[in-house]
Amino acid sequence: MASVLSFHVANKKLKPREQPRPKLRPGWALVRVRLAGICNTDVEILRGYHAFRGTPGHEFVGEVADVSGVSGSLEKKWLGRRVVGEINVSCSAYGYRSVCVFCRRGQRTHCARRTVLGIVAHDGAFAEYLTLPLENLHAVPDSVCDDNAVFVEPLAAACEILDQVNTKQFLEAAVLGDGKLAQLIALVLRTAVPEVFLYGKHETKLALARSAGIKTKKVRGDTSDLKRVQESYGLVVEATGSPSGFRLALGMTEPRGTLVLKSTFHGAASIETWPLVVKELTVIGSRCGPFPTAMALLRSGKVGPASLITRTFPMSEAAAAIRFAQKPGVMKILLKA
Image 1 (tube, rainbow, N blue to C red):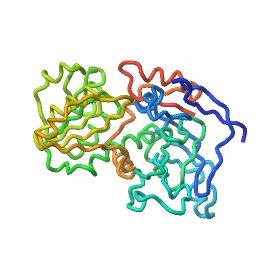
Image 2: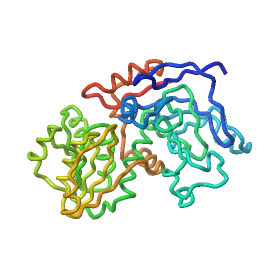
Image 3: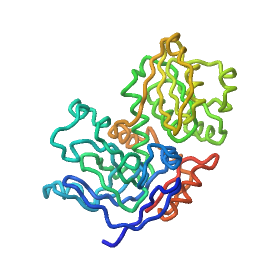
Image 4: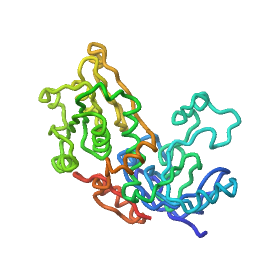
């Protein structure tokens, strides 16, 4: 195969690069990218998040082009299959003789030696091809189109809340933020909690949520919300991507309530910790989640995230696409290889 196109982070910009086809470790797959999604983490990477150097991108749907070091039956099973992939690559995939304590506990997403697709020391999906271990791949059913399948990774992150929190104890929940992840979280919570309210500052995004059956409330997105917003909830999910959002979420969580943190952003956040103690709050950090649960929601039709797509760019225009993704009112931007 001739050289393949990828985009690398350089001086806080995406730069195209032609390079040889990635080499495979035993038990790994070469995946031809069909669609890749741009998320806020990719934008934060350009701002310095994790000091990442390489090819970003961790949301994708692709097709297995090659596998290495497996039996003929496994090769037959995977070659040509449409797939999505879990982004954390753990000890076992790298062939370490002694796996870390987290992998021994079954907590592979917290592997002490892990790499993370497009985020930590592993080239990602803003390229024609990527590599992942077969153990990370999930086949996409024929009934799930590419435009929905590309959302499996962030949708799984939203589904993680269902595993972390006993949602049956809540009649209401609030999601702070009106971006892509916040809207996915609201859609997922609506399958488990009777009433879900999405708080955001962009009317066009709130209207998109309402069209999907989500109740919405408008905020300004600054410190004035701390005095203006009087509602409180037993379950609050913070997904604004902003330090001010965290402070508002802290104020909106009822005594002995549960606050789930989803935002990742580059830089420090200044907060007062006394409400955590005085209100005896449970605070849960929430990251990656279960792909099978997300896929089941897509198959059932209970969640249809393709409505969040604003525009699809050719992979060759990745630099322009990530600039466009940062414009006001823009939701999900995809790259098509």
